[in-house]
Image 1: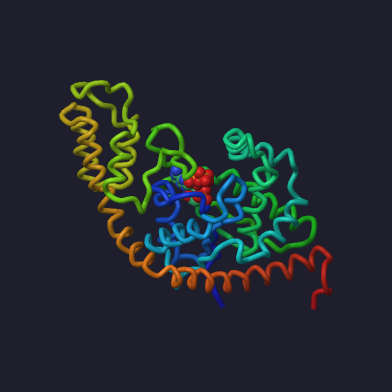
Image 2: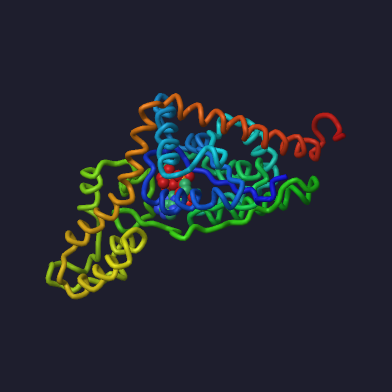
Length: 331
Ligand code: AQP
């Protein structure tokens, strides 16, 4: 018998995996692999809610899987799979859709943001996205969901849908507990918005040192620090917030003092952060190169993960169907 609690989390293959994903999600996934019975999913159906080029999807899934595995997500210690390989997720999404008030969906912050961002393609999938997300989680009867702060509202809805389904049809789903990651919301290079794959504000995990420097060089700092001689305010500087997450404590203390005293400029501070970034990302990039050399092996790992995930989702759906009055009577 497996005594560990079940954990589930997902990532969209909508673009390159970035520092926000790494610090806000993936590092935590890696740490939790031995604490929980973990299932991690590349949620390609979610990525369909915005326009994309189908001929690129397989490459994006590969990029995502490579970034996850190179960062330490270990398919031997968790279940790692692609959402569209497990059709039970969409079946369950339909059941949950009948429990989800439209007015509740319309209030979701991410829906409001995305519908403004994609006004030319305001599809029903954008509105019902959190219902499919709830199905992803509940199909595996996950008890714990580690996410960044941006997902907390969706998770509340998942809990509500589990409750509603259980009340209406009988118990199937534990209410999943949200576990916020230590790095809850990483801002992008613009210093304002959440670092997001769909925005040009990312530091990509698999970017080369030169590419990272090009992005970092233009990153917004303390906007009131106009000249090098002006004392800086680390507490409002986004680059300093990144230092706090990634640089050694001694570097953080040095940067803080030197910035306030104006003995270093923003470029010096960014050079130091570039060093910390490379120390964290160089080993990941090296592992990624080895994985890219054999993409078939990566897809084989995902296929194995999908077989495991299908077993878990089928078990759940057999129970859910019976509760809803579909199929043969339960034995
Ligand atoms: N900036 C962030 N700070 C902290 N955590 C973050 N996450 C994403 N961005 C940040 C966390 O990463 C996990 C996977 O996210 P996702 O790719 O599935 O969805 P997302 O939140 O929509 O990510 P993006 O990069 O912003 O994608 P797009 O631009 O396509 O919407 C989640 O746990 C999330 O909290």
